Image 1 (tube, one colour):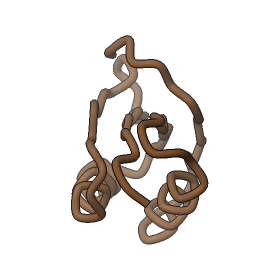
Image 2 (cartoon, rainbow, N blue to C red):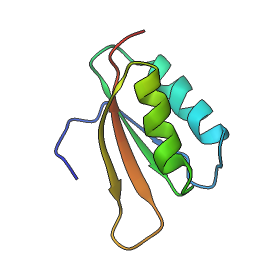
Image 3 (cartoon, helix red, strand yellow):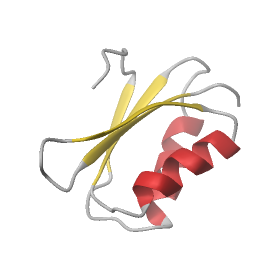
Image 4 (cartoon, rainbow, N blue to C red):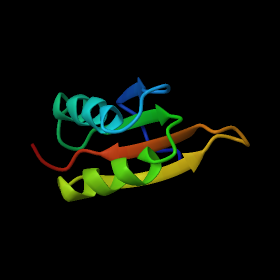
Length: 82
């Protein structure tokens, strides 16, 4: 996992699409441009869907990392625009 400063973290384990993206989108909308959001999740489809959607909305996906051998991941996204 990269050592990027994280400005906000959300835990959306237990949620499935589209709720995973809705929670992530609401979180990043409340942040300032240049800040980094870390998303903790366990829904496998969201590992691709959230980064793709964040890129489509103009944000930068910094990392997608699996936590050890668990079915949990972190996604880090930098807000690029309002």
